[in-house]
Length: 284
Ligand code: SF4
Ligand code: SF4
Image (cartoon, rainbow, N blue to C red; front, side, top):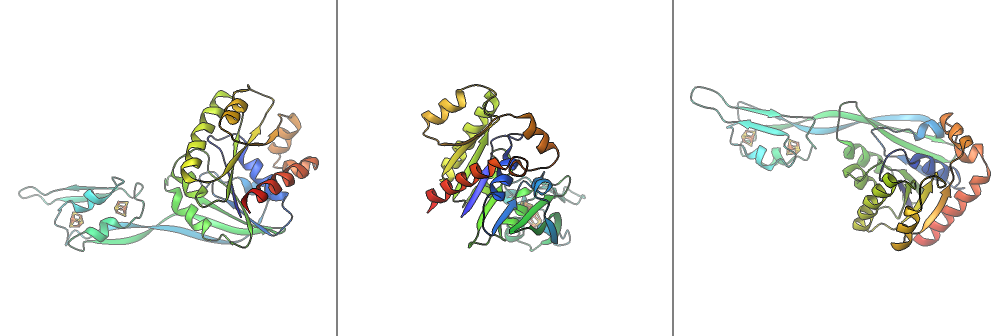
């Protein structure tokens, strides 16, 4: 069973929920941190890292001896990662590759009529694997300045063991990296806070999950702050609110020290275990 933990916006406590849920599951499981632009679950789980793998994408390299500047590669590139300047009388043309925009899809090389494009590997980040107790831990990290999170997320997800329960900490927001992370999950927990911004971003996340056809429920963090609108929205939309965590200075202090809630306040372990049991019952 794969449980993703997501949120329409950053700073709602998504990682806190993912980590504490994982620590409350009494079985061999996997924890995947797919928030590759800012992975921070390791701060709370403190895994022992045993293996590091670099992640590469194939980007085009142009052989200008063969290139006729026909422009086909620019035409087929959906990401505007190639510009072609045709030559003029007496002046050679040129092809520019914007490697940071390239998704490594291979279309340009495939369609080049002259065979003038060779693919070369470009490192975009790394994944690290280790463990903490019975939890197998995997996270990824995008190199600074790189924009292509999905290839790293795909590399992380290749390590999913289908015989185990998997908790995935998704990136915040509703863009491609989130979709890449959440798709094929059995359930998604959407973490929000009861504020106007929180509700707006929750509504966007709900749209994405409905399109992906992934069942979901909501966790309201800092539930005693803000207003009632999130509750009303969930009620109107038939979205179950599965857990509420009130704002507590002690929880915030534990967080700032990298201490999971279930370790600082063991009574929460039971609540997270109940949450897990409820999800497991829905997905079997
Ligand atoms: S498709 Fe090939 S031949 Fe045409 S401009 Fe691009 S690299 Fe050059
Ligand atoms: S590999 Fe794909 S994304 Fe990259 S430049 Fe070629 S067509 Fe564009």
